[in-house]
Image (cartoon, rainbow, N blue to C red; front, side):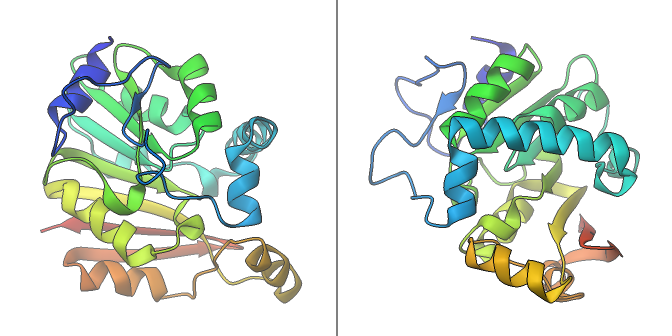
Length: 236
């Protein structure tokens, strides 16, 4: 077991007696009652092997071509040797970037619900400082104040309970540390209707910022570029 997965187990609220890491990630949703279903068309697509491959290639291309989709690693200020969390980590490339940011002695953990996404992430990115956990983002399995930074890119809009997921991200963040979330914002009406029917949510200009302010984050800022919005804040 790599150091990152050992660290993930140490941070759990309720560590299992016999952790399942047989597929390269820590699986905390083994029973049918524990694993939420992917109800939307988009969620089901991303949970499939073909969908996860398509998503992986599309996101890599986006980040190479569009600076607006790249995580603000410098602004997050993750301390050397710290530990960062990537919520809705998908194929794991952002998780790996966070691990590079924390450097030797640090680690980055990615949480996702899709087994297909996690399989791709493990194959491409897992290592001593990069670990992945299968869990529900609306009920993160980690103890309070466990992470030096939290990020989530293009995932919150697919979760049924946005406030619960945002609250969990804030809960596991250490005081004085920062969070950055990227979501789709209101755009062309036709695109909104198509994607909304598929299970995706679009956020109004101040909607997510208001949620984070309500959760006690300081210095909340939103930045919108086209259909993409970043929301940032710091835990007091």
